[in-house]
Amino acid sequence: MAKKNSIYILGTGLSHNGSTCLLKDGRIVVAIEKERLTRIKHDGGNDHQTVQYCLNAAGITINDLTLVVQCANFEKDIDISKYMGKRFFPDNYQVPVVTISHHLAHAYSAIGTSPFEDSNVLIIDGCGSPIEQCDDMNGAKIHVPDSMAMIAEKDSYYRYQDGILKSLYKDFSEFKPPTGSNIHLPTTRHSIGGLYSLMSRYVFGNMNDVGKLMGLAPYGDRKAYTTPLFHLKEERVFVNEDAFSILNNASKGFEDFKRRFKYFADIAAWTQKEVEKAILYTIRSRLSFNYNSNLCYAGGVALNAVANARILKEGLVDSLYIQPAAADNGIAIGCAYYGWLKTLKKEKVTHNGSTYFGASYSEQKILNAIIGYEKTNRLNINYSIDKNAIVTAAKYLAEGKIIAWYQDGAEFGPRALGNRSILADPRLPSIQSFINKEIKFREDFRPFAPSVLKEDASKYFKYAYDSPYMILVDEVLEEHRKALAGITHNDNSARVQTVTATSNPKYYELISAFKKETGLPILLNTSFNKRGMPIVETPEEAISLFYETKLDVLVMGNIILNKN
Image 1 (cartoon, rainbow, N blue to C red):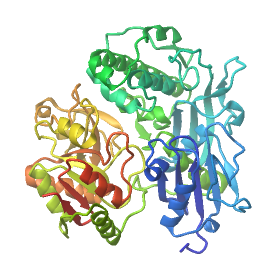
Image 2: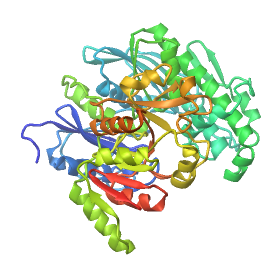
Image 3: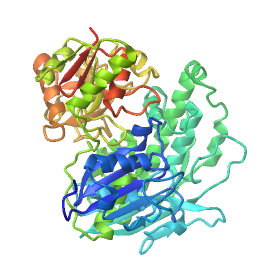
Image 4: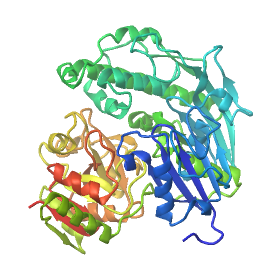
């Protein structure tokens, strides 16, 4: 039941990668991405299911809400009762509803979850709101192209100080209608994120495979193409459309991609190199305009872990906070914090750093899911309830078994951080290829991340960044590369997750137990899903995927399922 006099704010994002977040008295109670419920990657639009999920998880009704804050991509006058279908709210809903613009929502997602009380905030993504719908123009230096086309946000820069967000710099770009060619940005004309999406579509046939493109880049030659993809001038980034003439042989499918792997790897390397230049140029330009040693960073481009590491390596700021759900899935979090900090003018409540915002499933619900799967599939599941499940799981991992690890509430964002993970010993021969082929059912070049005890990170990684959200790339030290082949990428890099006893106690205990068994404080960690599938949310989904693949063991709370 709702606590008397508690303030509940619901934030909801209605664009692609839709999500909903619920704050209680300034703290996140629950948040969920729509794709986790509909099982459709990058799903968005109508928020009926995500709103219901959040209310159910908190044990409240819509009448307990104090405020609703919403955001879509290109609409400002959004009916609370319908958007791409009927929503969870009735036509005559009486709770105040606020609608905010896109980059403003991104900015508040970073402000609300960051450890800073004083920082600058940078947003770079594929495309934000049309200029006439922006709520954050006052006082900002603004660049607007002379065009009759629709003009939308490209990047935005803010200062957050004394509880107030002030807009400093906003760059806009126009939409350029397609000319019949497939080589055009799916966003505004000069978008860094849009260029990366274009290249993703060229290489893989899907504009949403940008993470995959970053993973392919180390297999390519950065010197194969020298034509600039951007013009960098006058503090701004412009896409060099003349370079598109090179792009005359797009992938015709997976078999074609495999056959011409080197060509597409070179395209990916070229793209990554040029995007890094554009990102760093933008950051340097904004910092020279108004410097702060603390920088918050969000928007889809902020998920580029290679570029993120360069921001730190080149010492552009002293402290960098990247919103873990930096893409549009984080919009709902920003909406909720906007309601708390701006609309209600409440003081910021320091966030504890967690991303584990999903609802937890009780042991009884897990048991019910097992019974249901047994009846539906007419089999007997080999399971046990083990109060020492963490120690047992560590022993299985030390024996070379591959484990699906399902604990408490799911992570919010694109990375599995130890609650919905597939885990293995990274020293196993051919472990990367086996998991890609037999469990994830995806391309064999795709890398896996290491989860390492934070206090041991410097023994294995060159820079040993504090990286709890797996959003920074580090370099595996030379003496460990051969032994840790399962998590060492083609260019000797690794997208590291550092784990502490406070960030995730169970996961920390598991890695510590594995270290006790083997001497190694690192686990190979990848998301608990397969190609084209969102990360599993429910016990039923976890059990089903366990039996679809060559996973050896599934650990759900203290319940262990074993195929042997």
